[in-house]
Length: 113
Ligand SMILES: [Zn+2]
Image 1 (tube, helix red, strand yellow):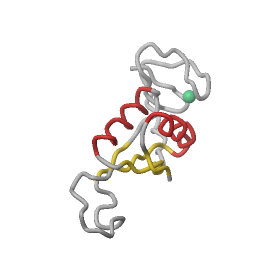
Image 2 (tube, helix red, strand yellow):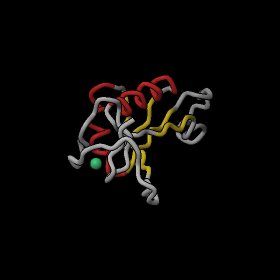
Image 3 (cartoon, protein in one colour):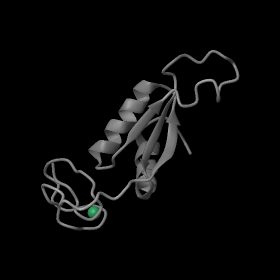
Image 4 (cartoon, helix red, strand yellow):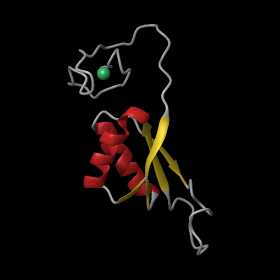
């Protein structure tokens, strides 16, 4: 998998340049300490299934994504009818939030942060 040596993101095969900084991608990162990523939430989906879709969409577009399901279980719902797996919260690295929001709002039914 190609990596951007600057941003340290992994991209899909075939990508030659980093879409963010324009740096030529490399096959492997050097031995330097990895930059720690600050994960921020971009939005909440109504089921873990949609969460998986959102994650896949983001990753296809070169945005690393974390999915936390049931994040709000018991906290957001006042009805008490929430079932396990009924919420999924998507996290992306802080510098990718704008890009992630743009993608998600067009393709996924999501409550953006
Ligand atoms: Zn880059």
